[in-house]
Length: 70
Image (tube, rainbow, N blue to C red; front, top):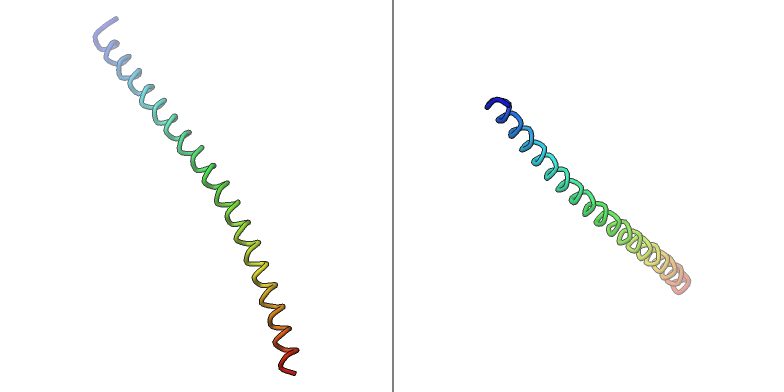
């Protein structure tokens, strides 16, 4: 193997290592994003439920106020 071939092989191996490392980092970041996305969806659903209940309470109070003001 010539010196140039050795250098090319070394460069190719380094590129492969760099690619593998970046792929691992990307997969890790994506998994974290999925976890956070799921958490946000659950939190949003809980907040949505609270808003619905509060809206119902406001509507009930509004009806009571109308009855009392008649």
